[in-house]
Image (tube, rainbow, N blue to C red; front, side):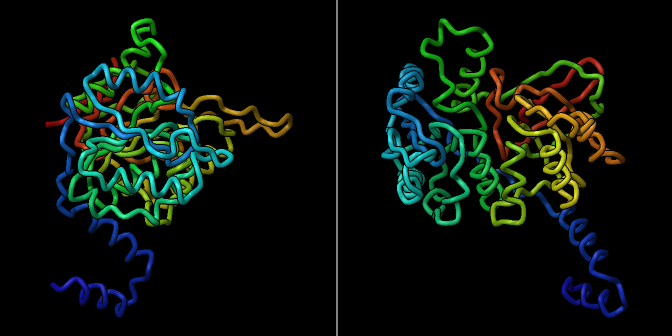
Length: 344
């Protein structure tokens, strides 16, 4: 039956808009998934561009990252926004837009690493032209505010991106860093050069067991909530969603999770991964919220069938491992632990 005629007939028989909304979501679930587009993996001699689409970073502060990336055999191209500053931003909106656009368009750059997070991508995202990027895909690397880029690229183009630490998180001397820092930095190299990624996490009494397969998406909860209803809105149907955040009040986290819940972003997930929720701001005396992150999450997904895990090693923390967004993964949450494995 013609879908347009079918929906029109439902309206004429008195079926209301809420029912149609449900039908639209249900229809989307059964659409054949679009195979993810994975940019070419990097090899020695390839070039990584460094740009600042959000917060500012100095030329001095990117040097540890430059040295380590060069030690892996990559060439580095420093963008015009590195060292620039417009208050909290890495240059004006126009400067950040121009620098990122140039790197998206450049056919001789194989990956783009953002200098740091902060805030700013949402101010330029609608002006970016991804035409040349889709013709010559490359890895876009970062987290926190860079979640805007991950979500926008995944939603519109299905091209894989890399959620990972950025230049401001590289140690001065990788060999002298502790093993956790070494492993997280080396996970970037492994992801960019084509290793099938696999991570584990300790069992948690609050975990909800089960297995799931789906495209991995997600990132910073604050940013995902802020782009809800925009052209960069995240598409969660059939996906494994990971969330992290830092520096928020408990009631703010509940409000943002509530947005995902009320907008039905949690309804049809394959699985849910909760990463680090760190540096939570203390409640005002007498205004205690009285709920933990565990409480909030489990309340929002009550009655939904998919596996849920807590304290996964991703977020604003030392153990922030590289995750390939837009790539198929298998999540296994068992009583003895959690495994997230890239599928090939």
